[in-house]
Amino acid sequence: MQQVTTIGWTDTPPAPAAPHLTPRQVQIIDLLIAGNSVKQVACRLAVSPRTVKKHLLAARVSLGAHTRDEMIARAVSMQLVHLIEKE
Image (cartoon, rainbow, N blue to C red; front, side, top):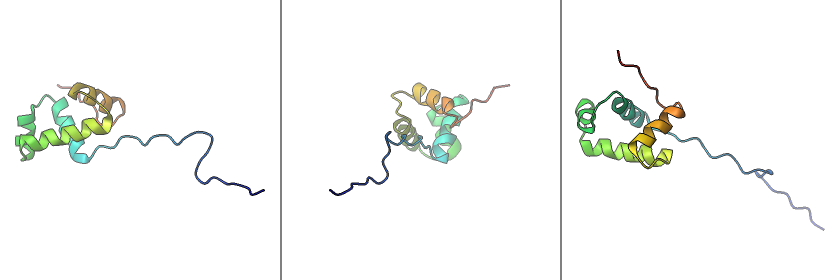
């Protein structure tokens, strides 16, 4: 009888990888948290509003969020971005 060995598997499946946001996605979310609109973020970063929206969509997908508010909440709770107190 042959012995079968499994490579890379244990009794439990591997944990899913933590979501990753690009530095630009983090920057855009930070600017939204600070109260900027998409147009204001685009102007500040010298890109089009459409580019900002594409970064936000990619961040939402990465975090598994359905709305912008949910994306921000998840990013904050996962400590991918930080809320900054307004003075």
